[in-house]
Image: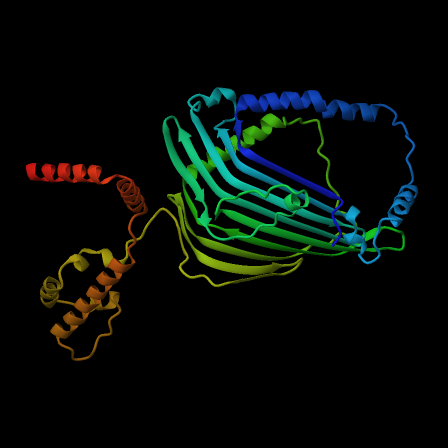
Length: 432
């Protein structure tokens, strides 16, 4: 394979911090207007004035001279898409990026009370590499993205709450082609990954009778790997983040009613690409209180999407989805199930009618069966339902997390501290 004609590599080993608030966005907007200018005024000048015709060089002359220069350097053993001038390689590596977004509302007057409210997004071990082969007949783009750990925290005054945590330990292989080409030390990434994506897009073209290239086919492949994901947010938080994002966009790009946005016309001869995708998850839990609760298992699924069809293949085990704030109590939780088995038997024997219980519990009634046998069958059914409820009832997430945090802090203490804690505990229990 020949060496690429263009190689670019950027590595930042220091932490990068970005603070997004209303004042900084307004400063960027003012600087943009000074550099770029007013698009409305420039458009008016073009419509009012007479367009001056500038000499345009014919493309055939440029292409011919370009081809003459490449005739001496091209290798006939490689196709046009593998020539050095058609290969581009670039890579970026960032050690840590922190983005803080201040909560904003539709007008600065409504931001009162939000001076100490912001969201912090922290991403570690960011890596991206792109390999691009471009020619008249074939175009290939290969992009690899990697994020070691992603964490998002909501700060309100002195209080903080973790909204998102993604990352799990796993062995992975990443291409460091750009750094090796330039003889630069390869980046040292963490042994965790939150998201790892690879995208490959291939386009083939052919020459038409008029001398233009027409797209024949387009095929893409996406491979997405997600680590352990934990999300714990409220549904009302999405409205606050959406309003802040809209306000940030409106501050950077003020809306002008007289300016007409250009409408992109579809390219002649363009075809929709067909995609093959593969997604793998490493477990997790998503809680959007009080409506949605999803448990994500370790699973893999793949699919195919074309211009007119879509297919999806997966094998899921242990996935659970809950939607809705109203929870309906199952039959296992009514008071009769909480009683001991012997006491339940005494109550069932003295009931006048057992038919309603048999219908609810779906117990077939045998002709000529005694009251004792019917009561015994109902009692055994209630006992099995109680045992099944104990096995399937999960421990509350908040209690589990609190217990894990306490155990982690206890493990960090030395022997003397643990002995003093036990002594205080026993002394308190003895006094009580």
